[in-house]
Amino acid sequence: MPIKTKVKFGQNFLINKEIAEKIVDSCNFTKDDNVVEIGPGEGVLTNLIVNKVKTLTIIEIDPFYLSYVEGKLYSNKKIADELKNKSNLKFINIDALKFDFTEYSKGIDSKIRLISNLPYEISSPIMEKFNKEKDAFKDFTLMFQKEFAGRLLAKSDESARSAFSVIVEANFETELLFDVFKENFYPMPKVDSSVMRMTPLDLNKFKDLKYSEDIKWAASSPYFSYLVHQLFKLRRKKLKNSIYASFQGIPPDVKAKMYEDSNIDLNKRPQSLTLEEFIKIAIKYRDYLGLE
Ligand code: SAM
Image 1 (tube, rainbow, N blue to C red):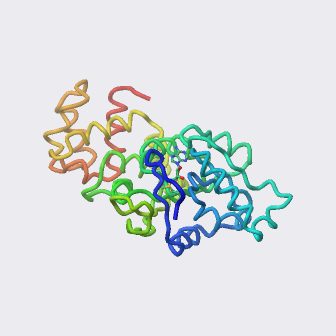
Image 2: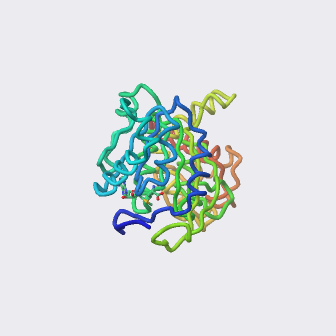
Image 3: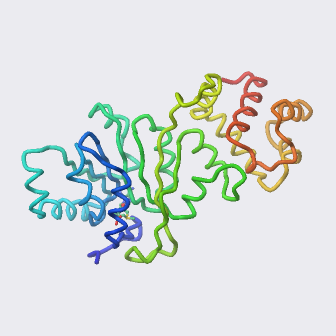
């Protein structure tokens, strides 16, 4: 049982070892991997990772648990023996939202494999940060609250589809690995969790070079993000009733024609649009307005 937990740091610890093993096994870590774990808590995942990888860097905001996990790893004789004379294990007491993953990745000359059972409080800002710094990462294995993961993973036509899902889809491949019931944590949170894998989108996979360029633009454009958010502001309305509410600089009939030319049915609602359709419209707006 955890010694003491702080609500403000989202300290709901995983107490089911089999699930911890399932999460770490899903990563297929090798001795070539440079892994960063955010928020080890009592080290239920850390213990299973440390001897499998080339380097492991542990980022924890709570100095108590950072020292706790350090003590725990070195008190395990097998782990301590392996770690002797190696500098492959680092403990950093910092807020993950302030950690510079890009610098870190440059420093080790390698992409990071990130693993974390994330505290709920930082789910949204850390996703924004991962998005901005995605080039520093090989992949992410993340546990979120189930509802948050659902929004993140939602594809077109799914009810949880939101502006957030579209932006994520423009940047990452995502996959739901499995759900974890709330009874597997202490203290028990109010809701269940989901474990998912996220990999920065490989633009080379698109045979269509033009689409690959377009998606690259959309992924990094604040303008694309703005447009998607605008469209979702009136998510319950059909496009024919909502597209006029924003971008007043474009005459209504010009806007309607842009959707028509893109083969997008104005009777649809925003959650039914595919990423490709959002990109098509964004590019038409961009070109009409002469934006970058
Ligand atoms: N990995 C452990 C597990 O699965 O049982 C602990 C997970 S617990 C949900 C979240 C952990 O993240 C806690 O150890 C907490 O102290 C740490 N944490 C909370 N906010 C953080 C932040 N901003 N930066 C780094 N660590 C944070």
